[in-house]
Amino acid sequence: MSDKIRVGIIGANPNGSWGTNAHLPALAALDDFTIAAVATSHQETADASAQKFGAPHAFGDPRKLVECADVDVVSVCVRVPAHFELVKMALDAGKHVYCEWPLARNSAEAAELCQLASSKKLVNMIGLQARHAPALLFVRNLIAAGEIGQVMSCQLNHSVDWMPMLPSSMTYLQDFSSGAHMLSIPGGHSIDAVRWLMGDFVDMSAFTATQIPEITVVDTGGKFPRTSPDQVLLSGITANGAVTSVRIQGSSPHGSGIRLEINGEKGDLVVQAGPGARGIQMSDLSVFRSSGSAQQELLVIPEEYYGIPGEIRFNPPMNVAKSYQSLAGAIRHGDKVPDFNDALALHKVLDNIMKSSQERCFIK
Image (spheres, rainbow, N blue to C red):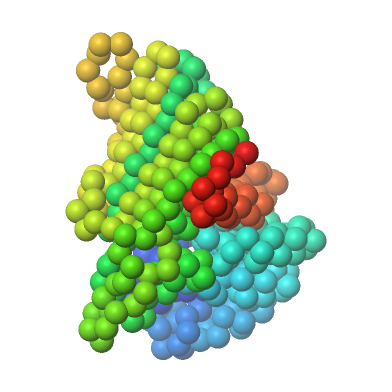
């Protein structure tokens, strides 16, 4: 491996893709990495992306990127239904892999990728970027330092506009079998953030509903069935003993954003992002603290929680950049990062949410 870690991005369409908006700016600003190659579904867009970000290789076929000798890490930033095939291809080629969450369409696919990555002894990372958000790192350390005492309860509410009107190219986001829907994407990121802060759910129950059963396809004027939840309510006890709830609602275009409240015996912490927040992993978050009768105080997140160049201290590239910094530590020094095992555990939590809701049962 060269001094710099050479990354190939699959899903680098220059016309507003997540790879282009988040991954490429993040990598371009980090000294540990170089953008070695980009791939899209068309050679013309791959060429345009390579020219914009200075990548020496551009491919209209992702297999060619995976097989490129100048690539150390393959980052998979495409639609969820394609994750399994591309991640498997990269692992089989002996490449380290960074895959965006969700890892796969379902737990069975995720388990197969976990097993393959383990057998290949390759570094694998899942894009659960809330774990790298400066605000949440700060809050986690405040809790660990005893700033609010024993944690008694935690509530996360996320009100997101889950797209009741979409072009036909995006209707897969309403199809439960695609693995890319409100429960898995904003829900998965939110639930992971809570589990990372509070510990896993040791007892839980859940309720899901689909309040808008059809969405409007804007380019055809037709309707498309929504087979995934647009309302999720999860409650239970987490490993730290806190009574914890997560509510994700996606049936209103007038959502209030994100509010995470953590109540301790000595005070409370609140993390917020305003209306329009698309996900806790990609939103600019503010942290507040209150104790006793004191008025809620806005906390300044210390500089040490950023550690990235100033030109990318905003989302979406900020938390992605911090995740890549962790990936560099994993490749060079064996540091622990959120990996495919963490992804599989989260996939199983989502399975339990659906099981609890469908069977009206309590999960231990």
